[in-house]
Amino acid sequence: MAGRPLRVLAIALLLGGCSTAAEVTGTATQRDLVQIRADVASLQASAHQLKAQADSLGPQVDGRLRDQATDIERQANALGTRVDGLSTSVTGLSSRVDELATRVESLSRQLGATPRPPSSSIVPAPGAAPAPGAVIPAPSGTPPQTATPVAPGTPMPPPPPRPTTGTLQPEDIYQAAYIDFSKGAYQLAITNFREFIRRFPDHRLAGNAQYWIGEAHFSLARGFTDAAQADRAQEELGKAIQEFRKVVANYPRGEKTPAALYKEALALIELKQPQVAQARLQYLVDNFPQAEETPMARERLTALKDR
Image (cartoon, rainbow, N blue to C red; front, side):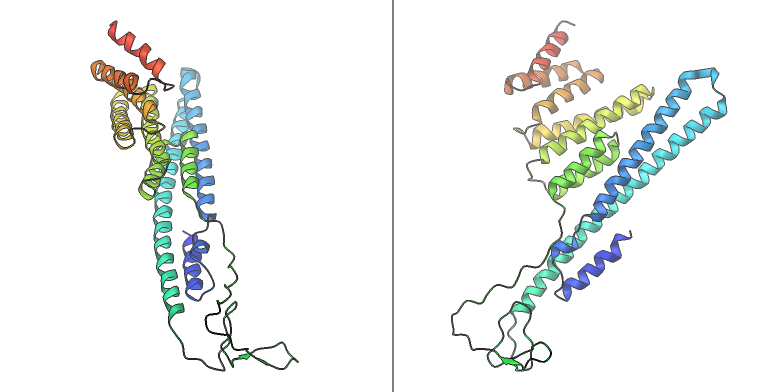
């Protein structure tokens, strides 16, 4: 939350004509958050590996050590949840700052368009042409100069461009969410991919983001299956199917649509719904004959029909 006072200060500078909307929405907070998420994901993976090693050794390991490994994993997961909440808060704050910056910039343009009475004592703004007869400040020791009248209709020279800082692009948000997914921080990846779709529903990567939400749920289901938590695994498989179907419904010719159909069928097979899975595989084969997933879909269809 330390970034909030800095952003408020940036808005105050913008009101004074010292900044732009691009300067308000910097990327320092987002980069810091990406690094924190990467560290937490690494910690979670290490804790999970430690617990798995302790469990695999069985009676050779003292019960207290196994309890400690379990406690470390629990604390790592709790930390990941807190970072999830922080990510949501930062994203919401960033959206609010974007909105305020746009309103302030609009107000600044309106104020700049308001006519003001000429005055010989008014000092022109940097980059603006002085009014006829206005006194132009000169360096110390140099007599003041008087502005030369400008003929009507003469175009005014544009003001010099203000320096801007890098703004967060849609691809940056998408990439941060994908990094979360690749590191196994599936819940955080789901949150950030949803935020990407909310902010950029028509972006060329929106369909891909929707697909990775389904993949994240599918990966969570595998983790629960490995942990012998069948109920939670089935719950995540159901969510994965819903998210994969959104890819097909909202992006019917998207880049990830064939993959979504195939993964949906795999989830249906695991949920013991072979007939529905067969229908989805057949739809994939019929409508995307050149897709990378189509040969695998044909093999699955053959296996289902031979049962």
